Length: 155
Image (cartoon, rainbow, N blue to C red):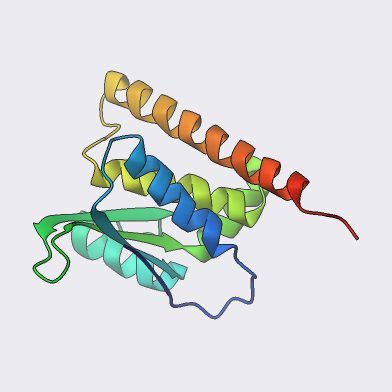
């Protein structure tokens, strides 16, 4: 199960389906089908506090991942962890990357999910592996959404 929490005051219309699909596609690429994840969309203030508390970085960031990896006794699923994304930072980065807000959020969701799966980018080899996989999943996701959009009958 994928749970999405929103805690922000920004008035952006977000396509939550693409975010759920980004997590599901990333998990599926790793044959992880019975894993649960929580995605929280928040603001720079909250992510700044979390970034300082857990990483000693005194600044906001785009995405944080907290890996829990325990079996939920109610569902029998592995609760993989939480992904926290600053919507404010994602909006700024979307403009920089020439993405829509949904594309930027999907990209960050994939990145966060890969962290939950154990990927990191501390060394050049880790970075190459993780970023290549992130790019492949993102491109596949965007192609899928573009295909679905083109199949929608136009009035």
